[in-house]
Image 1 (tube, rainbow over the protein chains, first blue to last red):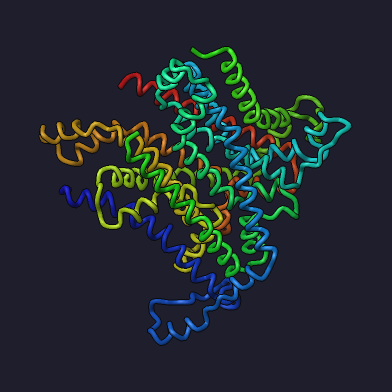
Image 2: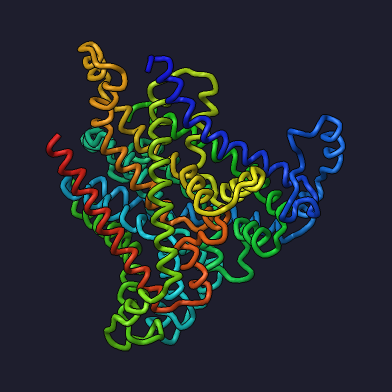
Length: 295
Length: 263
């Protein structure tokens, strides 16, 4: 293979795959979100076909409507679901940072021979099934569960509440927060802290003025890596939340699988994507820059 | 050096953090050996729930389907992800590069409901019959970004002069790739494959959207049982899955360590 052909293959194979299976589907979701329930209930007929002429397209374009978005805007249920998803993601990410930072910081300062083992210990739960890890919490949090067995006399009603969802979210996403933080903290030049101490800087100030700013790339990566997927989380609110715990991912899931309303489910997906497109772009810029900077 | 106080703080952070990460899993494993049907009451040691699993045909079929999907989709994702990593590190400039890097990284954080729904609508529009192949393609698509990141982090520390030396000595481009580039990035490619494999094993949401009759995966089976409540049988399945993954991960890390020590 010539140099040119090699280059073309290396770029085009992943490009075409991702364009077909990641980019094109969004266009179809957008189109579906504008169609009527009648034409879109399975077996649904495609709204646009390439074989139709412009006249047919025009006729069909008139049938497109914003009805599904009107449904979303008009119903408190959807608005509440969006808001509580963002709230849970925000609180969850903040708690993750508070728990994850001391862990990552301690790991980065541990003796060198221990570090690989500690990193492995953080990754291992991530390799075990996500579903099972969430399931484990049902047994702990439910009214007659282990937590309440231990706290005899003062039973806590955590199961099926937003608190349970936040516990589940923090538990499931902890490795995603710890690992980028650890990567940033481990790379840090420790002599800077020694220099600060020699110049009379107290440890807490050195931490605030040196460690935190230098670990900022890790903080950004960890927070986005947690916040974005948590916003669209389905399984955790379904298993740990109650019937009044609304999250938008779960709402989309219900619209699709229970109500079989594909257009409304698509409209929910489009709005969710519009909300998350900013954070996603920040994350992918950051990721690209980190990797290309050759760390 | 470190003061005793900060050492104490570090030890506390690690102990509490790891206790939080591991206690739920340990409790789950312990109760899989419970003779009692009640999940919170200890009724003595028993392996009855494990014995029952082998008779459960539905579960065994789902496990087999999941393994097939994971193997094939991880292979596909490894090829696509490695090519994407090469494209992003080797070619600083080509048309649509910004869009390309977006397409590579975005699936990593994209909520699964969006990826799942959009892929389903694509498969329906194309008139494809949903089942094994659609799940496999969907999994390869959402995991290849992870492979790309892992391989890319290895490629950026790569000494290009080794490839130039090989080319100067008359190696053809594909020989350079198979004899120089691939052996050097191999640990990252293997790590990427394993990551894609476990992500696929674990996925519930995307599989639920893109599957069809006859292609039910293990997480889908487990999920439908979990929704009915906590049972020791699920604890037993979970324990087996945890054991399998732990053995795999430790074996893989020993293999790469040995490989690194030799090379």
